[in-house]
Image (cartoon, rainbow, N blue to C red):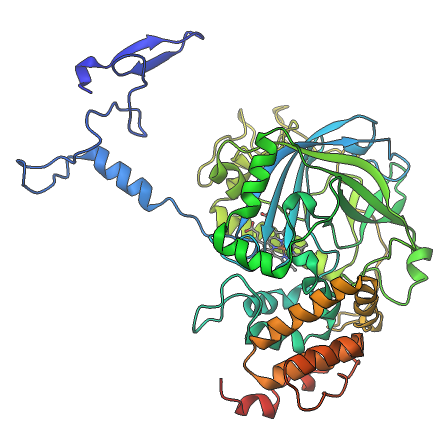
Length: 534
Ligand code: HEM
């Protein structure tokens, strides 16, 4: 296009457009300057050197050079969709949260599903936990329920998270394996972390290879609190139940699909939503009080434990429908920033040490990943309710306080003021104790619920667990690690342990692992391990 052909035309709304020949918009620089030639850089003569005058070339290349942002340190590969949450009935008796006050209330939602271990470009059907992160844009700010498709977790204390994640991801010297847990570092960590045994049973089960995101459950994992207008607290566990039910693939299917179509889960969600086949989940609650919590041998603050639904049935309270794909993957799915600490008044935390560590971590990770404290200015992260504050400036600020006052209290009658009535009332739980670093005895039983889960599986599902454990441990080269894992499985189910041991060619079975919590000494590298050649 020649510059002199470019002209301005007025659109329907009276706005001006720059157009090339016909009605096609003219290509511009990011500064709005019309571009004459986007195919050839500016040069001296046909075969001469390029010229620094070429501001279009420079801007285009520099922008391209900066396209990547760090991928998420975990859950790097994910796929999201928009939708809404609809409340079935008022939950005012339990919570003052505005979204739960009125039957039929619809709250806009964005959900991102993910794998945990693999990199952004890894394949969808890895044997892995799936993230199930829900952002609800409520009238009292964003509520992020950042859950997984498995109701328990590997560790009981957030201080162990970096070790756990380092161990599951590719090994630092060789940079493999990617996107799977079948390797020495992962199983070494697991074998030294008996609290992970319940989670391991789930991860070795068919739950870790779901047929699609549409056939998965989601769980808030931790015990949270609901707090009503009178300030009364009820403990709560959050569950998402898929309307389509649960389905998984078999391992040999997963392996083939990963090779043939690494985007299998993405494609499924895209196709379903684009064809009007909107996936739906029910939000279900387990509600209980302190007396009920005290009736268990395990601790409701321990994220490696569930409350069995046979003991405490779930109460459906609303539905989540996903009915719109993002217009732009990067702008929305990649830049969405979930944070467990985003809760509206009426939803509060328990003392689960994993949850409290997460509440500390997510703001930090979003600052690093998105690069500016103004990440809430990105539309996908901005609240959809009115909001007013005095935060200002910083990289990429899109909005600043309006007027003279950027502080409060002020004498100008400008800007927002805090409100003890409308504002978030932290539940005034009474706390007392010495500063210590220790794990309570109530967190010590690592095998009972692992056993319950295994027993709850059908014979075919139990065979899948045995096959998964055998396959995974067959990729572990260090014999003592295999043996340590099997010694834990002995405490879960002896037949399962024997089956795996036999398939791995053990000459004799290891003794069951010591069921006590490991002491600092237990965690010293064992002499056997240090002499094994890798
Ligand atoms: C990301 C769930 C434990 C740190 C995520 C995501 C999910 C999730 C679903 C992906 C969010 C998205 O789709 O963008 C969970 C669950 C946990 C857990 C259910 C345990 C019950 C932890 C712990 C920590 C942690 C203990 C650290 C102390 C992170 C970080 C990210 C992340 C740093 C990356 C966030 C980002 O860059 O956007 N987690 N997580 N998580 N999680 Fe967790």
